[in-house]
Amino acid sequence: MTKAKKNEFRPNDYVVYPAHGVGQIVSIEEQEVAGMELELFVISFEKDKMTLRVPTNKATEIGMRGLSSPDVVSQAMKTLKGKAKVKRAMWSRRAQEYEQKINSGDLIAIAEVVRDLHRNDDQREQSYSERQLYEAALERLTREVAAVAGGDEVAAAKQVDEVLVSRAA
Image (cartoon, rainbow, N blue to C red; front, side, top):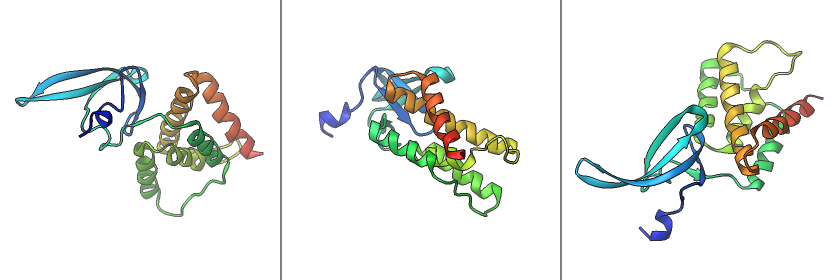
Protein backbone atom coordinates (compact mmCIF):
# COMPACT_ATOMS: atom_id res chain seq x y z
CA MET A 1 0.00 0.00 0.00
CA THR A 2 1.34 3.43 -0.88
CA LYS A 3 2.06 5.86 1.92
CA ALA A 4 -0.29 8.49 0.46
CA LYS A 5 -3.30 6.20 0.52
CA LYS A 6 -2.64 5.06 4.05
CA ASN A 7 -2.74 8.54 5.50
CA GLU A 8 -5.75 9.74 3.61
CA PHE A 9 -7.19 10.87 6.95
CA ARG A 10 -5.34 12.93 9.53
CA PRO A 11 -5.94 13.91 13.13
CA ASN A 12 -8.58 16.66 13.45
CA ASP A 13 -10.19 15.63 10.13
CA TYR A 14 -13.92 15.14 10.18
CA VAL A 15 -14.93 11.83 8.69
CA VAL A 16 -18.16 9.98 8.08
CA TYR A 17 -18.34 6.50 9.49
CA PRO A 18 -21.28 4.69 7.87
CA ALA A 19 -22.87 3.27 11.01
CA HIS A 20 -22.37 6.37 13.16
CA GLY A 21 -22.26 9.46 10.99
CA VAL A 22 -19.86 12.36 11.45
CA GLY A 23 -16.94 11.96 13.82
CA GLN A 24 -13.56 13.59 14.27
CA ILE A 25 -10.22 11.83 14.17
CA VAL A 26 -8.57 12.57 17.49
CA SER A 27 -5.36 10.69 16.86
CA ILE A 28 -3.69 7.80 15.12
CA GLU A 29 -2.24 5.24 17.49
CA GLU A 30 -0.37 1.96 17.40
CA GLN A 31 -1.77 -0.95 19.34
CA GLU A 32 -0.73 -4.54 19.63
CA VAL A 33 -3.58 -6.90 18.90
CA ALA A 34 -3.04 -10.65 18.92
CA GLY A 35 0.70 -10.15 18.57
CA MET A 36 0.37 -7.83 15.59
CA GLU A 37 1.05 -4.11 15.48
CA LEU A 38 -2.04 -2.29 14.33
CA GLU A 39 -2.34 1.33 13.36
CA LEU A 40 -5.70 2.74 14.41
CA PHE A 41 -7.68 5.90 13.81
CA VAL A 42 -9.17 7.07 17.09
CA ILE A 43 -12.46 8.72 16.14
CA SER A 44 -14.55 10.71 18.55
CA PHE A 45 -18.30 11.06 18.13
CA GLU A 46 -18.77 13.87 20.60
CA LYS A 47 -22.56 14.03 20.39
CA ASP A 48 -22.86 10.33 21.16
CA LYS A 49 -20.08 10.41 23.78
CA MET A 50 -18.43 7.57 21.91
CA THR A 51 -14.93 6.80 20.73
CA LEU A 52 -14.20 4.33 17.99
CA ARG A 53 -10.89 2.75 17.03
CA VAL A 54 -10.70 1.79 13.38
CA PRO A 55 -7.70 0.03 11.82
CA THR A 56 -6.24 2.49 9.28
CA ASN A 57 -5.94 -0.27 6.68
CA LYS A 58 -9.64 -1.12 6.96
CA ALA A 59 -11.05 2.42 7.02
CA THR A 60 -11.86 2.76 3.31
CA GLU A 61 -13.00 -0.84 3.05
CA ILE A 62 -15.68 -0.31 5.71
CA GLY A 63 -16.82 2.83 3.96
CA MET A 64 -15.27 5.51 6.13
CA ARG A 65 -14.97 8.67 4.06
CA GLY A 66 -14.19 12.33 4.24
CA LEU A 67 -16.99 14.87 4.46
CA SER A 68 -19.12 15.35 1.37
CA SER A 69 -18.19 18.13 -1.00
CA PRO A 70 -20.42 21.23 -1.02
CA ASP A 71 -21.58 19.86 -4.36
CA VAL A 72 -22.91 16.68 -2.81
CA VAL A 73 -24.54 18.72 -0.04
CA SER A 74 -26.48 20.79 -2.55
CA GLN A 75 -27.45 17.58 -4.35
CA ALA A 76 -28.76 16.25 -1.03
CA MET A 77 -30.76 19.47 -0.58
CA LYS A 78 -32.22 19.01 -4.07
CA THR A 79 -33.14 15.46 -3.11
CA LEU A 80 -35.02 16.81 -0.08
CA LYS A 81 -37.08 19.03 -2.35
CA GLY A 82 -38.23 16.07 -4.40
CA LYS A 83 -41.52 14.30 -4.04
CA ALA A 84 -41.57 11.55 -1.42
CA LYS A 85 -41.31 8.11 -2.97
CA VAL A 86 -43.07 5.70 -0.70
CA LYS A 87 -43.24 2.11 -1.83
CA ARG A 88 -46.30 0.02 -1.21
CA ALA A 89 -44.21 -2.62 0.54
CA MET A 90 -44.91 -3.69 4.10
CA TRP A 91 -43.53 -1.33 6.73
CA SER A 92 -41.01 -3.85 8.05
CA ARG A 93 -39.50 -4.21 4.57
CA ARG A 94 -39.43 -0.43 4.01
CA ALA A 95 -38.00 0.19 7.49
CA GLN A 96 -35.18 -2.20 6.66
CA GLU A 97 -34.44 -0.33 3.44
CA TYR A 98 -34.47 3.02 5.23
CA GLU A 99 -32.10 1.69 7.84
CA GLN A 100 -29.71 0.41 5.18
CA LYS A 101 -29.73 3.81 3.51
CA ILE A 102 -29.05 5.59 6.80
CA ASN A 103 -26.16 3.25 7.60
CA SER A 104 -24.74 3.39 4.08
CA GLY A 105 -23.14 6.69 5.00
CA ASP A 106 -24.25 8.00 1.59
CA LEU A 107 -25.54 11.54 2.08
CA ILE A 108 -27.93 11.40 -0.89
CA ALA A 109 -29.44 8.12 0.35
CA ILE A 110 -29.85 9.65 3.81
CA ALA A 111 -31.55 12.69 2.27
CA GLU A 112 -33.95 10.32 0.49
CA VAL A 113 -34.96 8.82 3.83
CA VAL A 114 -35.54 12.28 5.31
CA ARG A 115 -37.60 13.24 2.26
CA ASP A 116 -39.67 10.05 2.27
CA LEU A 117 -40.41 10.09 5.99
CA HIS A 118 -40.95 13.81 6.47
CA ARG A 119 -44.44 14.72 7.66
CA ASN A 120 -46.18 18.06 7.63
CA ASP A 121 -48.38 18.99 10.55
CA ASP A 122 -51.52 18.26 8.59
CA GLN A 123 -50.45 14.79 7.50
CA ARG A 124 -51.22 11.55 9.28
CA GLU A 125 -49.35 10.63 12.44
CA GLN A 126 -46.03 8.89 12.21
CA SER A 127 -45.58 5.59 13.96
CA TYR A 128 -42.90 5.37 16.63
CA SER A 129 -40.50 3.43 14.40
CA GLU A 130 -41.10 5.79 11.48
CA ARG A 131 -40.33 8.74 13.70
CA GLN A 132 -37.14 7.09 14.98
CA LEU A 133 -35.85 6.41 11.50
CA TYR A 134 -36.76 9.92 10.39
CA GLU A 135 -34.93 11.47 13.32
CA ALA A 136 -31.87 9.28 12.82
CA ALA A 137 -31.68 10.24 9.14
CA LEU A 138 -32.35 13.90 9.88
CA GLU A 139 -29.60 13.98 12.49
CA ARG A 140 -27.07 12.34 10.16
CA LEU A 141 -27.93 14.76 7.38
CA THR A 142 -27.86 17.82 9.62
CA ARG A 143 -24.54 16.90 11.23
CA GLU A 144 -22.81 16.42 7.92
CA VAL A 145 -24.30 19.57 6.40
CA ALA A 146 -23.08 21.42 9.51
CA ALA A 147 -19.60 19.90 9.38
CA VAL A 148 -19.21 20.76 5.70
CA ALA A 149 -20.35 24.34 6.37
CA GLY A 150 -17.99 24.75 9.30
CA GLY A 151 -19.78 23.29 12.25
CA ASP A 152 -22.94 25.24 13.05
CA GLU A 153 -25.57 22.57 13.66
CA VAL A 154 -28.35 24.99 14.52
CA ALA A 155 -27.91 26.81 11.21
CA ALA A 156 -27.73 23.50 9.34
CA ALA A 157 -30.92 22.24 11.02
CA LYS A 158 -32.66 25.47 10.05
CA GLN A 159 -31.44 25.13 6.45
CA VAL A 160 -32.70 21.54 6.18
CA ASP A 161 -36.00 22.45 7.82
CA GLU A 162 -36.56 25.37 5.45
CA VAL A 163 -36.05 23.09 2.45
CA LEU A 164 -38.51 20.54 3.85
CA VAL A 165 -41.11 23.17 4.71
CA SER A 166 -40.79 24.94 1.36
CA ARG A 167 -41.42 21.61 -0.33
CA ALA A 168 -44.75 21.30 1.42
CA ALA A 169 -46.06 24.56 -0.02
